[in-house]
Length: 230
Image (tube, rainbow, N blue to C red; front, side, top):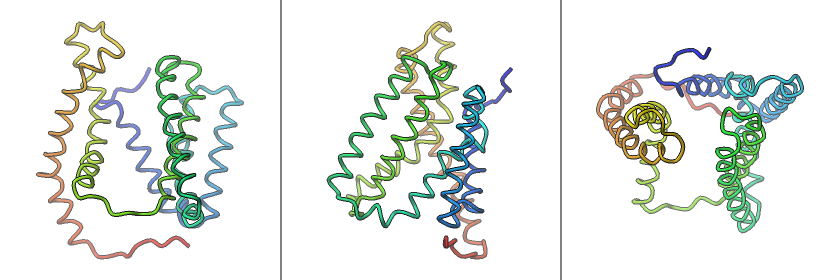
């Protein structure tokens, strides 16, 4: 039986925090450590598949989540080499990987979703496509962004976590209002507006209550210096 959580997606936040700590402590310290983390993660996932373990064993634990995190450290250490790639080729790869990622997402929802036996293949394809997309974006030359576009992008970034954390609860309540029989695209369509409204409200509350406290703590903290990977 799955454990009760008031906010069901919150488990992933704990996994992220642990992996961010591991990145700071070990993985992102050296190029060799980042590569070793990737190889160890791949070995664990391959072993888990060969043992016939359920996909949950490769999805929920924090140590399984090192597979999506450690390649990011490798991209960081190889960013200078990525920057030498032809920009047109990089943009073409980003475009192709983005299309493949979207198609994979749709197919996963139609064919498997979280509870299907084929979830693993969609999960790993998703990681591969995102690795190409993120690596390609990091390889593109930095150019100044229009102020309006930069503000909109920041707003989207601020919106990401509230949407992620609230979508399950909003969908559950909307499903109850619809009589508990609605699933799929109808439930999604009806849930979008209340989910966005709740997320925007959470952003405003964070700006009023949390951000000032965070800024005060940062101002009082003794500067510890910036980690410089070797």
